[in-house]
Length: 368
Image (tube, rainbow, N blue to C red; front, side):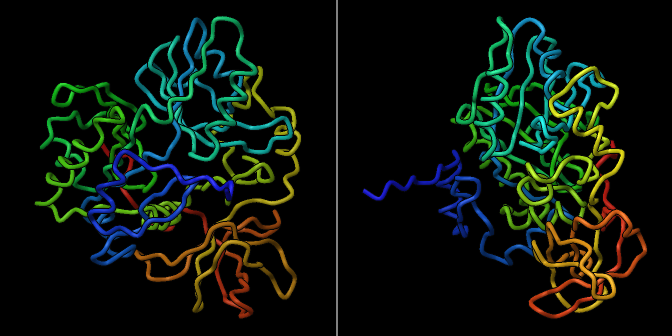
């Protein structure tokens, strides 16, 4: 036997196969990268201009329950859960003691004794392991990766799609509603990774196929499209949203990634606090946006230079379907500032770019 492990599949795998999706391993899951009928650019454009639906069931799901669950979570992760109320969600980071990022995740505060987590697929087990190791008596941490699916409906017409299904819409950004759809429970979250107005729906695993089918049918009048993870990547890069493993990692701290806004600096404790406070005073490098002004598409690990001296490297780079030019996130020497001109080594050719502050495009994510 080879000893290799087959990738996991989402509850919607059969739907993707039937649609002819191009599938690939992503975080140990066999997930759709793009669908026939225009591919990444068409799917990206559908979200920016109309609406698209993504299967993101590969994302982790976990719960922390018991007396004091919310305060326990608050003592572990970077952001301050006391900034939100029941029914709200929060972006936060799980760091190690050196300040490196084990994972970035969304925390959903259901009650002071019930916190729902959505980490990244490949990091769920490690986040759960760390929480279990630190949990006091009475706190139960459970990995729920195959208990729920996650379906993202993103785009300017997303409210109309959910309205057609009888699901709640219009609640505040980064809030959620526990709803009933055709007799089955579904969490409707005003969250997403595209920058556009949208929702992430969390149904039970076995209920996900019927919900997916209903969404696809409801999108048809708006020329909506099923979208793969390829479009999800170009959309999030246009927003400057980090991807763990590229823009955040055990070697790339929240300070370096300019994610200090997701750190409760005044909290009494959280994992990695001392290291991050020390680094905050003198960061060795900082994440910046790069807008290509020459011809070329930057990719991860491309060197970035100023006057022939390397000052950093690209962490995420792509072709922006909205801007029709190359864009990137890069870790650069802290002396490099917005407005500066740099050169990116793209396959041995120097491509000029301007240092900018993301997002690269304007969107309406926070509008009610």
